[in-house]
Image 1 (cartoon, rainbow, N blue to C red):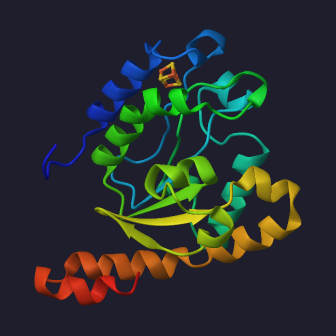
Image 2: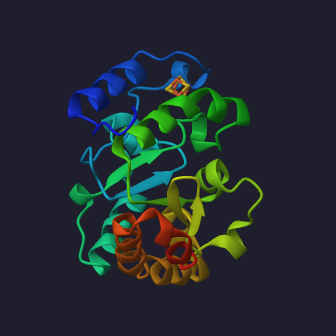
Length: 207
Ligand code: SF4
């Protein structure tokens, strides 16, 4: 992709490829693929785990209770979901909402990689340990959440999954607190992007 900007048609083409995908066993039980949604140049990309019941029915990510909570969290920093890109590690619903298996994540990974390359977000927020593992495979979410880390080209902020936070009050407090950091991290990421290459090493120590 080089430095080309993504166009909506490139993302739309990717969604069509995902809709036809039968690479793993999750294809068998799905009603709809759930590729992800959001502006093609979104500054923030949220990556969750896998579609659930409502997502599978509608073909859209985060539309159940966890999605409503995510919208509340976005509102706490003055943002709406239409401003951000939202997707998952796997694009088809695992049966009975079980966790995605390693081979399913691996087979689906090129689609997530392509989304990241096309959208080129300023920061990536991982929701839950499966999406955190894509960037920080050795990290423990209980220690890593809320700490922005530069991983390659990306600033990654791990958080608990909103669904876990809905069921566990202590996670809820954590995700609410972690979310409030987003505007500052995004602003700092913007300053880094605008500096000359020689200045970047110092600026990056912010993360
Ligand atoms: S989960 Fe991913 S790899 Fe598996 S069938 Fe769906 S789109 Fe293809």
